[in-house]
Length: 531
Figure 1 (spheres, one colour):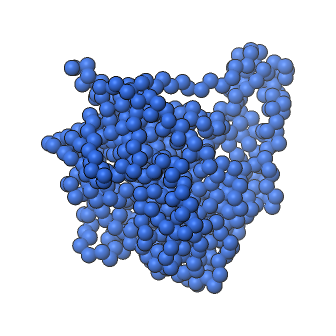
Figure 2: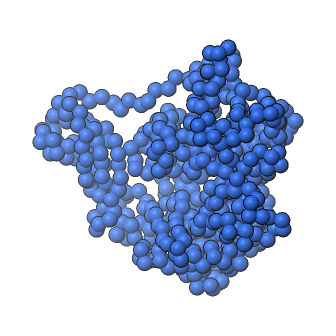
Figure 3: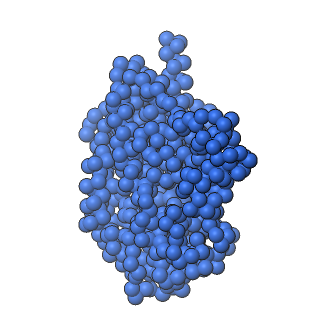
């Protein structure tokens, strides 16, 4: 029979097959010979006590032959001669997973991506890191795979009710991700592995009759009555389809401006703003694992922190153990920082966003641009852009980011020097009080002190505070009908993913792409049956 068993093991035990079989046998009151094998269903780390344990949930094969883990199977159809087609604007997780869903239904997906393919995109990222030159169409946010390709590959989500998480994870494994993402409590692929996975997805899409166009920036959306009839790209091409998915990501400001100009309804959406904090990874390991020498069988440690300060939440975001801070600007004259980790998480630094949620009153009070009103749907976008431009000026240009040591930041002192760091364009000591809105600065300063009490030693001048972490989510929501998922004005326009305000991360964006695709499939198949 097969039996689900929970085991609590030391790191050395959790990596030894024979020991695990012995523990299973003891738990089942069986002989070791009775245990033919097991599958790990879930793995998590418990570092709350002096000793670190790994909790394993396994499916044990007891007195029956062991069977290899079976992955979910997918059937993709040839769509070269499909009678129905859908245009997907954006090749991020939402767009790609929507395309895969259409292939299963025999509907042709046509992806229009403003940026470049993964390989070409690398050269622009190298130029950005090395010389601080921002290509507005090819950067950490725009290009094949979207922001997800070069933003760590965390696959953990709390959006359990939004879709089938296991299906998304199985699809990633189908395209080359390691199968441990199926059972790790906080699955992670790594920035170094994601590009080949994204390329494999694109290859399957085109092999089955889907189309993927790069450097095809949508600059106009043509509507007639309650329907979209075409989209136009910057090179004067026009594309038509039965339905249109708008999956352009949280940084496509020109799309938000286009929608507003065309009187296509959008809404201002609160987002979180703050900084990136970077410590030596060895310090985080010491604090979390209670030893100066991390067991090599344990992964580099992470953390998650939240504190209520003056009734407002200050919290960590997108923590990257063994990672780097990367320049995520999408236009010249702005500084945006993000973080990512390779699959081994073996860089010497750990970084995390530390942010505060911004509300309309905050944004309106801080925005200096004339004519901005509380009802402006682009209010948060204008506010976001203003802070990023101030960070650029404080950094001195060329993507050099303004920074302070942590205690200096909280005490209001400009640092005379900065610790070693991972940010390749370089850091410049600056007064971040002049970059951040005063309420954000004050909340962060108090929050850092409070975090130091929760994690002894966290509050240290050996940590860098780097501005600005401002692309945590979209500053705009594109409203859609709760039942059809179509835009509230147009019955064949489908806002989707992070940029539309309905997701936050790779997995939730992928699930939203699938959910939208399912609605379109049902609609198009119904139309086909009626014809």
